Image 1 (tube, rainbow, N blue to C red):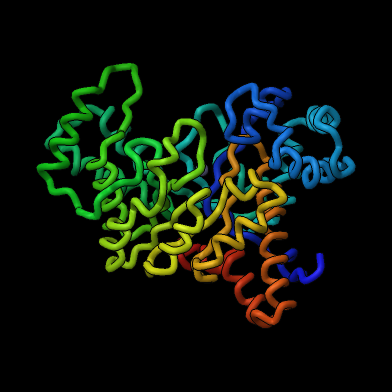
Image 2 (tube, rainbow, N blue to C red; image 1 turned 120 degrees about the vertical axis):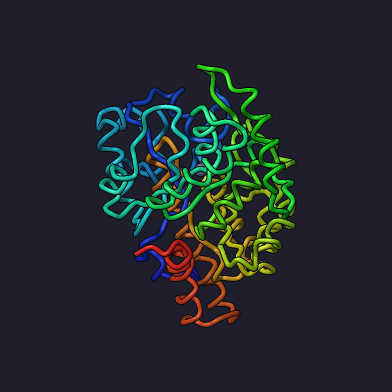
Length: 373
Ligand SMILES: [Zn+2]
């Protein structure tokens, strides 16, 4: 590509938000279900994600680029899921992974197994709501709930590099900046615990509890990720605009604790604004970048209109399919290389500027924010 920055191809990426991949071979329906956020039965190969997968992942399985879906899936079945996982994780060229271990609808690879496959260290991110739900199911009463959650999170923090909030999937992102007081948490815990039934899952979906969990994480001094914007059909997307978090981001800024806004699409410009105006806010376009396929460059360019180059990170948000690791990394490298290279060609910035920004976005910023060794 004219104007691309070739150095980016050789940079190891830090994938700061990703998940395990499945341990089974997949038929076409199962594969397409994991390829996009569409419901089961979606023809996901006929999407930009599907087209990009045929373009970039087929050669990883020794097929020509654009091999048709039937041929791709047949080759995948011949190799078996373990070999496909090994090839795709290597092809991603990762320097480190930060794995969200809180979403396990079926047995998936754990961080140590991902690390082996990727040939790079994997670190853990703890899901706040899942911890809060485990504490609720453990039999505590409302008065001791807050203390029990704080203790559980402090324990979890010892083996993790950060926390994640899925408030977006539950109460939405309209969280006030106020730290809830003990009485408010106790009342919210009472509401939660009164709904706990043996044998059925506990579900935290309460504005007060999401805020409480966020401030617990801040008190522990660990970076906090928020799911923002684009996700599967469980999310009410209109409640996931990151601007709804403005009060909370402003209130937490003085603590210095980094807050990482994940995905963001289609609110990535709003997220870029927040990254510019709040010192502690960082952003990515994970998940969206591989779903828009060949349009990933446009997406990254729009994020970087306002987001400072030092506030943007890479993530795949890969879940289920190992292909999503390779695809996200390939599309992101190309997008970043083209964007930075085009700026050099246009005289908007210099080659040394471009290489410095490439290094920050590929991994230096993530390593600093999460204090990775
Ligand atoms: Zn995710």
